[in-house]
Length: 118
Image (cartoon, rainbow, N blue to C red):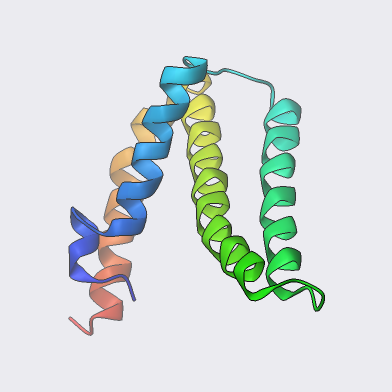
């Protein structure tokens, strides 16, 4: 379950948001095709996989493993931020998404109420 602080100050969400800001500063608003987004996401996911392999490689030193675990979190944040950027691009090209917001938010609200036994 998502903790109460997720509404505003949940650290992983803040990290992803900061990465999104960093990406926008570096690259500007990106409106790629879904195929290009898939390639970008695939590259980021590959870096996540690489970090996991490095962390568990039998021939690595303890220092190198620690570095790989630290890098894993960073790569996961970058991957999540790319997913968010892709969603933003989809929403920009699909004005209908704005009209669907209330239905989606209401559905989430009802799900949270159910999970909290309200």
